[in-house]
Length: 86
Image (cartoon, rainbow, N blue to C red; front, side, top):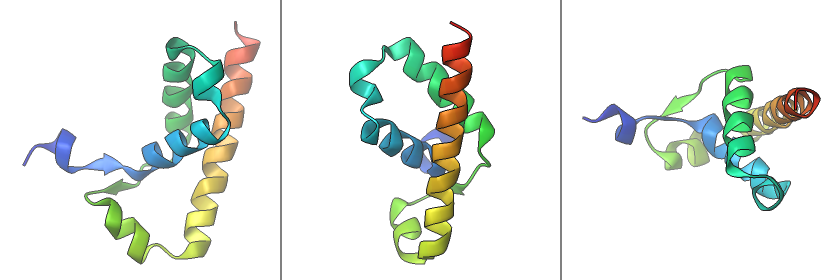
């Protein structure tokens, strides 16, 4: 077993999906995006999974919505921090 291949934090996927949704990947440089991801993920609880399909089938819709809302709040707070500390 190789931990960095077999296990990952599900919030990473949700975070990247939200960044694309906001089109930040088109308007911000890689340094900003890396900082944004680190700050945002540090504001979120870890949710480790082995297989993406597990989350698709076993995560209730209400919990998925709550996780997405947490990601939006974390990204908003991280952006505010980064923009205020340029």
